[in-house]
Image (cartoon, rainbow, N blue to C red; front, side, top):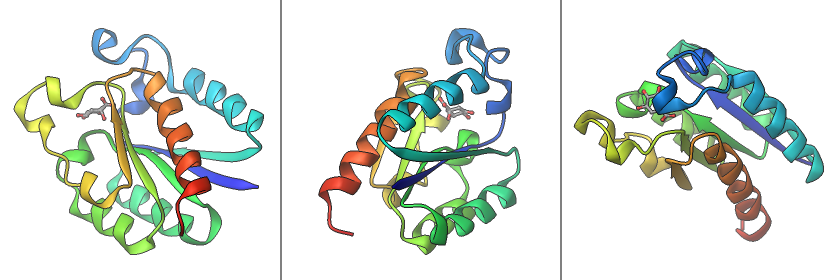
Length: 148
Ligand code: DQA
């Protein structure tokens, strides 16, 4: 069975309340519930973790090394400056898909840069809640077709 870890970074626990015109009105729990069904239909074991702390996300990525086949991560604002998360991703050598609800390229200039994209297998941004499903689907296709 394929095992995937879903990671969400800072402020994503406020989904639904936080800038709903940008991030939508659904809570993270709503999205995760639908992702769990999406995963189960594909015989995929999905675990999820949200943290507002950079160190906890780094530790979760380290833990993933032995326990999952790949990671879908919405790193929130850490996308734009966390070298620690970048190093954790390259350190574990797992396929990681960087995921954003909003189109980070159509927003403030500081959001256009990601220090993580270069160590991820791909990036999905701009499709709201659908970004997570597209990212998970793309990761499963990658795992099925790319040599490890
Ligand atoms: C985000 C985009 C980031 O720039 C922002 O800091 C977030 C959410 C997104 O999902 O669109 O917290 O990752």
